[in-house]
Length: 307
Image: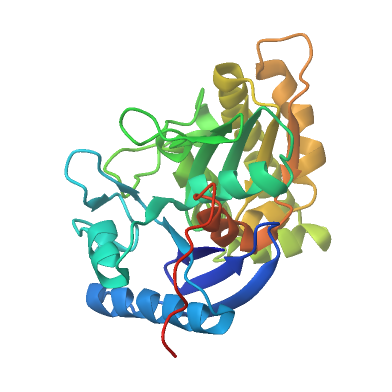
């Protein structure tokens, strides 16, 4: 039995999967805002509830914002800032009295979709989160690639390729740089772009809804978004040549992306033919928590916890 926990900025979700990937238990709770100790307690409580419900001990994988530094063992680069500088894995292992596996939330998306999702059977799967932030994860032949610096797939903090006059001035990013892909392709990035050009305060969902009503400004913003996404993903294809690119996160629900972006990326890919498929995550917003469970290749059984 495998347990996966998705530690998000607004909610913590847990799922327990059997050996075939079937769900045995699922629960979510609000994330304690700005409180590290309360976050630990919430995760431990969810795991305990799940193991009582399924009647057995399980392996536990955790998907987090940011990543674990291979030098310090501390969380870094998390937009849930109370996690930064904290020994999250060490603390949870002590509280749960077992080893854990921990990975970035985009890596968990990649693992989920490569295991039994849209990338099933593919040799190379690159997964992208397009939401409040922009992240990426890479799975090759069924194995998660973390890299020498534990930053493989950190695509959102590369600069936007070939910025033109329409992309200037380069927007400032929370990471301290300017012009990061995330500042253009996140939901807040789309909204900020629309406001800069048209003065309207609309979030990404409202902009997409506006295109359905024939709003020219919204349509222009979305077309510009598609062009930037195509250029940014063309760089990924040129570097990794993945079989499948899977999109997750709130913006992945924009259906037109899957037809328009591959049409637009063709001229920027260094090949006379692009076989890479662009697909939505099969497991939707459940993919991250499932991927956290799949961080363990086999279950870790033990005695059923006390009731």
